[in-house]
Length: 115
Image 1 (spheres, rainbow, N blue to C red):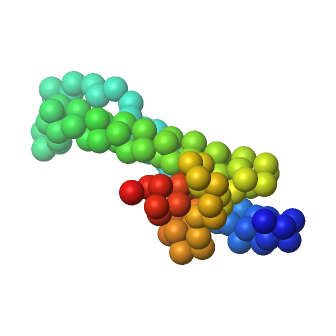
Image 2: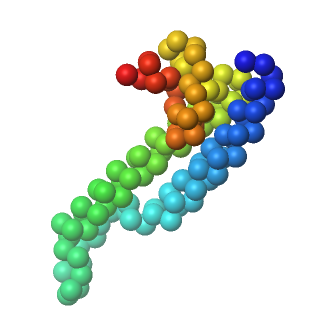
Image 3: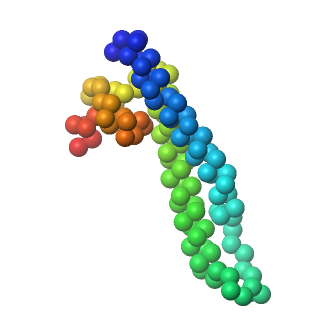
């Protein structure tokens, strides 16, 4: 791909990837309290049971793990943009295609290699 095409890819996907990464960082900060250890309050009436609170904590931790995985994928995509390797399949080197990249710009494989 020519330099112009690499610049086009960077201009098309870098802002979206950066915005998505920032949104994930903000969401992570907002849900930090949900991941704190659950304390037993036997005096409270009408509150969630300890089991429910522990389940919510586990769900929040799993969601945070998914956010971190997505943040790593975004950082890797931004690094590929910087290296001029963005948009090309890691396995065969073919262009991934705008349709796939528009759906998820962190993809690293073309449709044929992904199958």
